[in-house]
Figure 1 (cartoon, one colour):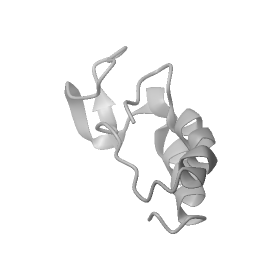
Figure 2 (cartoon, rainbow, N blue to C red):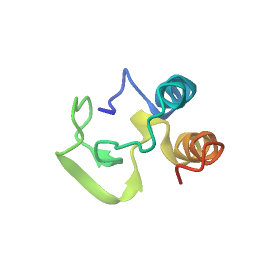
Figure 3 (tube, rainbow, N blue to C red):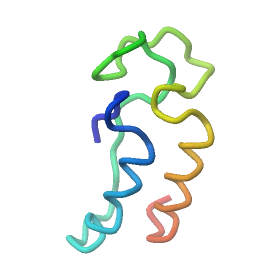
Length: 74
């Protein structure tokens, strides 16, 4: 999934049930560390030590991981 400020961790989490219904077994995310503000791809990282706050930050990532774990993807 290509994450950016308009498609965040919470948006991705909302897709998990649908993907599971399609029997998709893995999720791939674009980089989740802090990228240039407004980045549409995340590959222009400016801080490798922080989860991007535009994507929902560490709390948003935790919510996504919790949703994925329900299907044992993590």
